[in-house]
Amino acid sequence: MLLKKIVVAEDDDAIAHMVSMALGDAGFLCLRAFDGEEALRLVRAHDPDLLILDVMMPRVDGLEVARRLKADVMWSRTPILMLTALASVDNSVEGLDAGADAYMTKPFDLREFSARVRAMIRATRRERDRNPTTDLPGSRAIDSHLEELLKSGKTVAVLHIDVLQFDAYQDKIGFARSEDAVRALARLVLDEARQASEGGAFVGHLGGSDFIAVAEPAAAQALATRLIAASDARRAELFPGDSGDLAVVIALASTEGLDAKGFDELGRRLGQAMRAAKDAGKAGCVAWPVAK
Image (cartoon, rainbow, N blue to C red; front, side, top):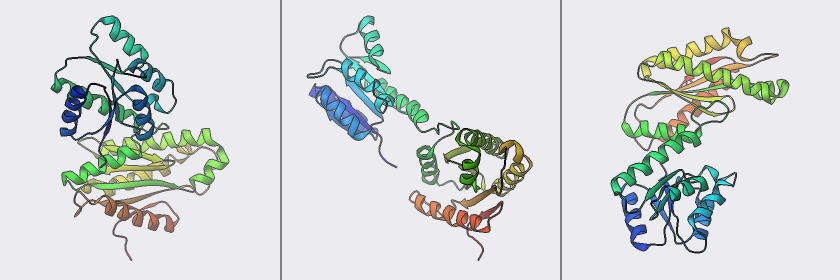
């Protein structure tokens, strides 16, 4: 998994060193900016998970950096933790109005500072990694979740759900109606996964009509069977209009035997099973290893 990147924009060497050491020990990759212009350049070049921004800096001050980033359609999503020696309420309001997401005054406790950083990154990641159509975790969140499962050593089953001929269906009914169909399918997958899981279900949206669900190995085959049956029974509701040759197909693979470095192998297993499912050309589930 890639290290989370943080730009530290602070012209005071002692504070910058203290902050970078604390965050580096916590597993973050810190990129130092000595002034506001360099902070803007580093954010645009590296798309960090967080910008730690001092208010009083040379060339471009922190308030102006925050204003410029929040006014940009691409970089407005970058969370900003603003640091300042100015402790009045007016200063805090000015920083937040400029675009800071959180505000801390110097001096600060490093434990509280590190906890605030982690909380901001968690909250921002949850929002950034969601698919905008369904609000389910997106591809980066799916990758992170699967990597964490592999690292934990827990054996789970992973289902890759897709719809055959969905592109042709989308061309016929239009983008807006096909997006409604994707959202309806997402609700179906999530509802069924929740019923199959006692400890909470993970469902993610890769994009288009592709979804990932994680289940206990003993429940995975039954979940796949129910999903196919439910999508067929509710076909007119899920896919209004001329649904033609649409068919829900599911690839099923286990993480059994995989260690923390087994992400690519898991992808290979799912890919092999999905190719076989699509080659069959009809609704159904294919598990890895594929029967020859």
